[in-house]
Length: 196
Image (tube, rainbow, N blue to C red; front, side):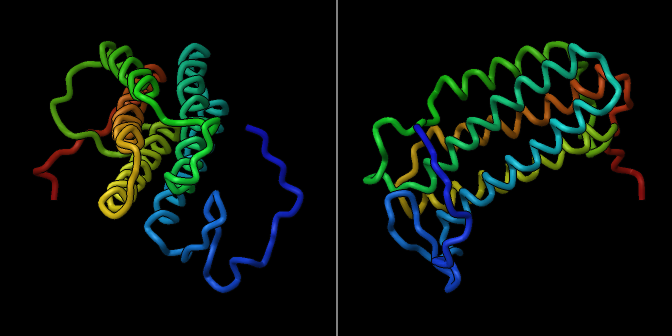
């Protein structure tokens, strides 16, 4: 799919409306816009994670593994945003989709990394280093995107793989955060409920 952007501003949104892929105008606060806006924000946060991952000290193999997963996720999130910005009747046959194989790839990553981790004895607190902290931020934005997509799916048709994908991605971000802490020799902050 080729994309050509010759103009950045069009002024068509100055009155609170925007065009979906296919041309239908909708309010900028519609559930569909909210859903793909959250996906876009998540993608931006993953960019921060990737930058921190490259810049922070740590084993090269750890950095490469995290970057490969997140680069793939960023491209898949762009595909997801494209799907959410398109009404089902306007989908192009060549438009990239989110498919079961994308969810399965995340499950593979989760299982592979989680096997290397000790079992949890408490909930994890966000932190442990810059990369892990950004991964926790990405996880929370992912959960918000998931809620927005679920709300959209209650009102309009949304492919079920889209919901499955963001659900699994938030799990992956959590496990990657834990794995990152271990690989970088950082301390994983745990919740201590008796602390007041």
